[in-house]
Length: 249
Length: 249
DNA sequence: CGCCCATTTGACAGCTTTCAAATCGCGTGG
DNA sequence: CCACGCGATTTGAAAGCTGTCAAATGGGCG
Image (cartoon, rainbow over all chains, first blue to last red; front, side, top):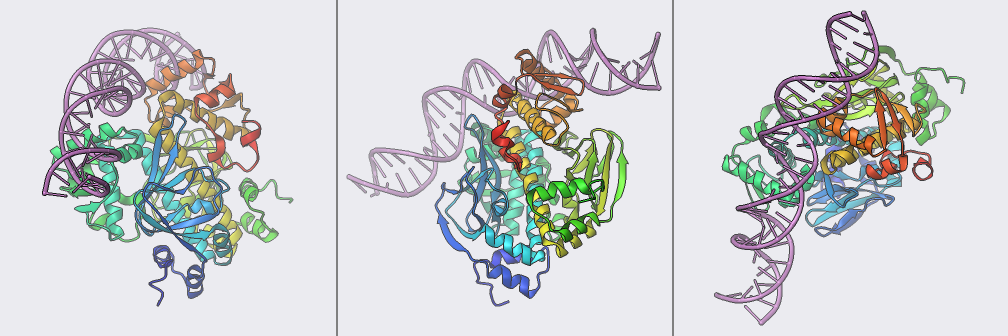
């Protein structure tokens, strides 16, 4: 493959980890029309309630999905890293049920929903891969429901740190001992169903116990093994393809 | 269509609401091999962590998906009614990240995962429909994350009652004013991240305020409009195809 | 009639929130 | 190079929602 530098190559690489594509599948993916967009930190990538016309691939930076509830509170639904498909539901659903915002300055590639639908009609293998991606997305959602619903603040926070550690490691953006995660304590709170103040106190507890240090946007995991225990974490729900699950985590 | 009495017809009807199938698509779906299974109340339909070999269609009864966390607590992830596809992730993912249990005696049709994969490869329109179903599933998960993460016990409970009311109504299993929902107060608690005791007190508050009466497995909505308000409920996230959203809810 | 499970209640503990106010870190401008 | 300003972090005290633990009550089924 000579197209490693193609903008959509990360998407191809990610999807083809799960399903082998033949040459025509690959060609069809790389021939998708797209436009490249830069979004600055804090801006919307997709607004809630608008009708989605595009599906997006996160090329660089960190983004998150959110919902605003009646009293104005924000729930962060998932965090996304470079290579993740954002707003895949925009390819089929009529209205966006949530918003997507940029946590850092990001770059995205926008692909028209119509092009996705046509691609899937003509190349069923690509459809399977996109479906797979959506299934994993759902699995992560499920773990978040359980995390927010059943675990204490401390366990929730550890769990989220583990998830981000593993995913950043997988994406090559860090190690299990140190990675960059530019979320504020308030962001953590909104992701975990806690207040920023309580995240602060909980984080301090983890630090006192020698599990984690967080300084600005750097996260230092002092004891991965104990953090995994404290976070009731098992990476199965991420449905990683390699054997990270048993070997290193 | 003469095959209204076919066991898989409900699945065909549901999926074709979203995407028009041609005759060969329909035929292919109805020709799927399946086996019919009865599961009694409380038993597992799919066990967590086992490798899924089948995808299931719920033919009758009520089922729910759950996760058990480290300390043994149970989080209910979603409730399923007749016509729902269960364990669709079993078609592609290697291990089941959650369990499925029967809330009432249920009947399911089991379709081999391999058959699903092959069907999707040959009939891309069916693949689109299944993908769509999975996307809606994810949307419901997201609402649950927000529900459990950001709302008070009272609002959470109202929200869940609204969701079930709309879905039972949609499925023809009840009206918006009265429906059967055989969940115990403990079940509600496990779905909402609350204790059964607190659900009891909250339910009593709703009753006192003239919103809802629950007696055994019957739910009587005394004031749908106020319940919707109290539950911060909007049905958009269910991505219903008809205009229930604006007309009657 | 009696058992079993679900519901109901009460008292109390406790985790988390709320509300401020103080402190810190760092980019910007003087 | 230092001062200013703003957002993020930190802290304290007090309130509150929800959980815990038990025990009593209720209702349906064998």
